[in-house]
Image (tube, rainbow, N blue to C red; front, side, top):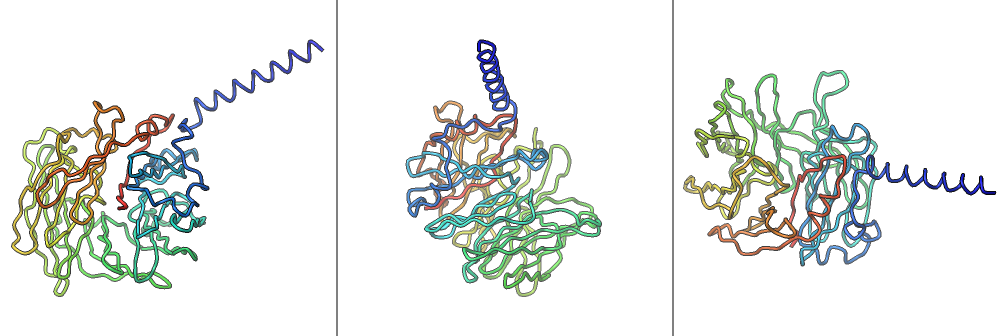
Amino acid sequence: MKRNIITIIGMFGLGVFFYFTYTLFFNPTSADSNLLLSIADLEKENFLHNKKAIIYLSTTADQDIDGEGFSFAVFIDQKGKAQALKMEGLELGSTAVYENSVFLEEKNKVRIVGEDYKEFPMKTDQYTGERTGFIENKNIFFSIYNSGFTQDGSGYLSDVRFGNKEKFQTDSIPFYIASSGIEGDKVNILTQDVDKNQFDLRQVTFDSSLEVDHLTMLDTPKNEFFNSLAPLLSDKKNYYLILSSVIDDFNEKTSLYRIAKDTYEQEVYDFIEYKDMKDLVSTIPYNFKNSAHIHQDVLYFINGLGDVYTFDTKNEEIQKKFSIENASKSKIRHNEETYFKDNSLYVLRYSDEKKEKYYLEEYNLDNGSRVNTLDITGFHDLLSSVQKKSIYSYDLKVLE
């Protein structure tokens, strides 16, 4: 009997050892349950009613080789409290918001959260997101992915998931996408052929299947390599692209391309020039997909230094409009994000001096004044709970 008791105690001790070993070395998070959301929470009809913003974070694609990659959709309520839904990983993933619905994506599933909760498993896993959005007159959410080269290596595919509460389907765009943007019922994309150093402007329309139309080839110098720094923007008459070209380790020029919709005539403007920079990486925007915006005939762009530049689409005037307060000039980022909406710029900020570390600022685009600040509780604790993986922010959306 004594031997049996010792055996049971030993087995219990071994179980405890394996539990804590798994928790320490294999469990990617140890977040407090108060910080995590359940499906039952999302199914509540009024779940979104007090929500102010959503932050999307994920591990990178290379961290999902072991199948343990993950992402968080972090909902911030009006009082600044953060709670997160844990999902499968998706590098460069994002969310989409339309009225009382939020679209969430992950590696192997999409969800619609709102008055009704729906989720749709996807047959093909995705690892690198490009853009999500909502096409109003088609009543569909969509997500585009830079999926990779075809199996035979003959081409490139960017897979697309699109649908609504009724169903989702998939299709592919046979190009690598450098940047994209929504225009009414279409998605404009800038595709890139790296081997030819060529950019092409194309347009995607959604129906029972996808249609991709070629609009024009971008007239970029073939001896320069360009990177897209912003979403593809448009107004009634023109398309707008912001591209950078590195001159050397310390100097870089950023150009604004304006392409007429009727003739495809292209104009190039010297937008920003960086000279004798100690670290050009620090100038890279917090998020390429949310770095630019057009409001009342003015194009706004925010770089990684927190400087907001404008281009007046009427008189073609370029100026440095304002800077966010106490912006870091370092390339080190702490999951900061930016998001333009109407006449506001929202910035997810980090300060080591604050108790909760993270806060959300709102700036007025007309005069650059900071009009609101909201401290976020729980977000830093959530990030601190991540173990054995590295997680990064990829999107910020403001609901209200």
